[in-house]
Image 1: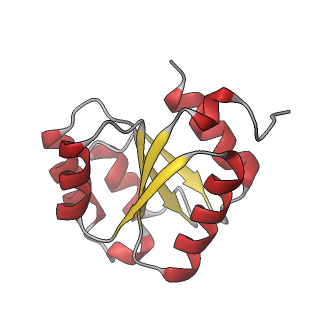
Image 2: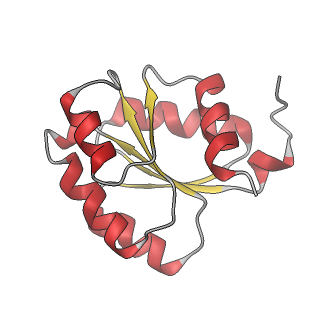
Length: 129
């Protein structure tokens, strides 16, 4: 079990790249409950700009709203930031889109619907020091 007060979560900063208001709001609520610092972006350019300006521990990217262009977005981010964990958010992690994103540089896929336990697992897996 985890505690929302764990330093692991409070000392982390993540970017959420999402174009869907509902899933974006859910991600923000869960990250806030964990005490994880977060920033929301809506374009690849914003994501790259934020990664360029500050230190972040991971990038969560919603795949469905990208409508087949996910691999292109992942490649673009990965080109500039080869080491940051990029975690896809997808209803079906076995979808053609999710699998193409994994081949393009995505580190992992978090299966929707998003919940706190899944988010905790991903942060522990990809953002541990």
